[in-house]
Amino acid sequence: MGMLEGQVAIVTGAGGAIGAATAQMLAREGAAVLCADRNPGTAARTADAILSSGARALSVKADITEEPEVAAMVAAALEAFGRIDVLVNNAGGSSGRDVDIAGMDAGVWDRTMALNGRGTMLCCKHVLPQMLSQASGAIVNISSGAATAGQLSMPAYAASKSAVLALTRAIATLHGREGVRCNAITPGLILHENLAPHYPEEHVRIDAQNILSPRPGTVEDIANAVLFLASSMSAFVNGHVLPVDGGLFAHTPTYAQTLELGLDSLRLRR
Ligand SMILES: NC(=O)c1ccc[n+]([C@@H]2O[C@H](COP(=O)([O-])OP(=O)(O)OC[C@H]3O[C@@H](n4cnc5c(N)ncnc54)[C@H](O)[C@@H]3O)[C@@H](O)[C@H]2O)c1
Image 1 (cartoon, rainbow, N blue to C red):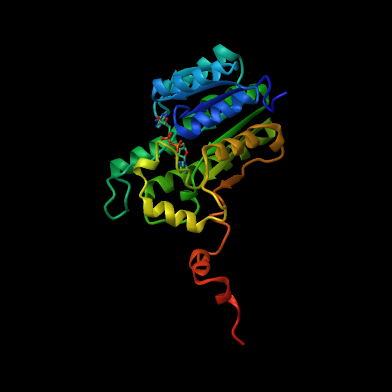
Image 2 (cartoon, protein in one colour):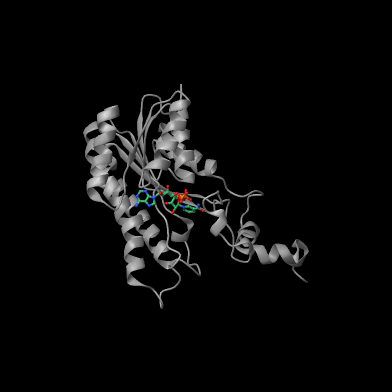
């Protein structure tokens, strides 16, 4: 028996790297999965992979910034599978023009907020009535480590992913007593095939120096955490944020420089 046997999940951004791995993980654990993406081709590719493994899946084109498309996505899940137990709000992203505040193009800010903040809210808005009518459901929001601390780039992305954390706590607080759980994940750097070509090599090295894990993060690391928060294994976890970042935020900011100096440098000179 899988951990989600007989359940139904919606995964947004299911055509992307983390979304595809997550959709396939939930399907392996027994869920029927509605794979949604604004790119219908990649959503269909993920659904096909699930179908060929013998599990149930359907793909739809859904741009989460367009409310009618979100409503249609939820209707498609209900028509195909009859209920919704899990919503994974994974669709999201950032703009290459999201550099700093003094030079911020307000349109870039608005589009980033519309995607990560408003889009995530819309998916919750349209799934919640079904979960409330079932008196059960688990929502897992993919935020980002960028929402956790100040960084030297992507301020609009960071603010929009912080909105996702506030939304997570609001939904848990509003609907926890009605059987709905809502938790978030803050991934660290997950360098997959879609991101690697755009990510500067020297920053990959800096990330490796600053995580506690001896290896980089993978899409399966995020999918595993989603599975935990989606399943009854986390039945008493609500309104929380799970960092899946190799320990990036678990140590003092001087960690990497101290390691470089050598541990002997830490001995107090008496
Ligand atoms: N990869 C990382 O290092 C990392 C770190 C922290 C957070 N995240 C978050 O993880 C999530 C998945 O990202 P990924 O790394 O797999 O990137 P990705 O680009 O591979 O996947 C993102 C997917 O979302 C889809 N999408 C984008 N806008 C959409 C919209 N308006 N409506 C519907 N679908 C839309 C894209 O088509 C794509 O398939 C994102 O929310 C991202 O912000 C990623």
